[in-house]
Image 1 (spheres, rainbow, N blue to C red):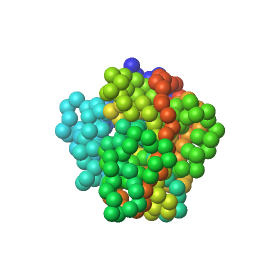
Image 2: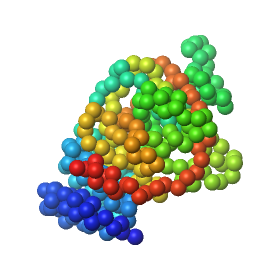
Image 3: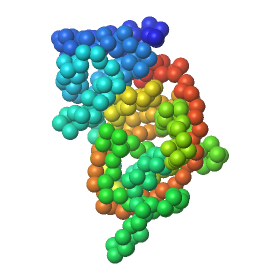
Image 4: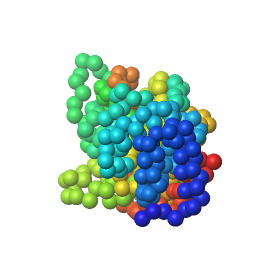
Amino acid sequence: MRPDFPEFRQTIFSYLEAQEYFERSTYLRGFIQFLKNGNLKEWHFAGCLAIDIRHNLADISEYARLIEDFMHSERAPSLEKLHKFIISHYPEQNLFSTQMHVFSQERFVRVIRKETVHKHFKTYYGDPTRDSDELEMELEGRKLTTSEVSGAKMIVWLTKYVDLERLIRDTPAEAQADRVCDWLGIPRDEASTGGGSPHEDEGKDVMVYLKYPDKLALECFQPIAANGNWECAMPLFMSYRHIDGWGRTFNHRDQQEAAKEVIHKHRRHSEGFFMAGVLGKVHQAPIDTGGILAELLARFE
């Protein structure tokens, strides 16, 4: 069902249709029409795309080339198919923000599901003569290491450790995982937290954080629409104007409480250990979509 928000439709779609690249290309005009006729998720993507272009977060020529190639090859476009198309084209196209910063004094932290940690990290002993064994089940306070740092679509999402630390300190232990997920824009619906057998879901509903080594120099990018996950039922990623090199998450439960976020590319790692902490079990909760379009419009303007 198409959303009913005339101001968003007029502002966002009129802006996109007026862009030179979109005006002169039949494929790009077709893509905008596909978004305009879509549901909330398509309008959400359109809002992020408009923010990226208006605030010079992305090279419009890169976006235009990607979308033209996608529309040329796809007779029945969908955001899910576009997401897969983007993943397959990451190696040869610059689908990252024009805002790249090298942070060397920042303390970064990554929040992920416990199952991901057990798949990709090992215990760190700090002794090169001793082999790292498989990761033990208890993670709290454990030093971890890995040869490569990566994530979905070969990118990793980070926030500031000092901000996460403050949020944890101000939240009861039993509510920490839920509040942190909402703060970071991580969905807590059934599709995201599991729903199968206990064995299948082991570690999927437990959130942990990994504090990066101190003073690790990282090339980071402010995230843009091309980096979001558009295959999930209701994406919560939202583009943000350029202020300080950090994006801002969308917290659908408390829009005044958003986290700073950046991404970095897949990289090999040999510079110290990650310190793990456990946030606890995340509980399922429906996504409140009521404020998405209004927040996109506010970020655009």
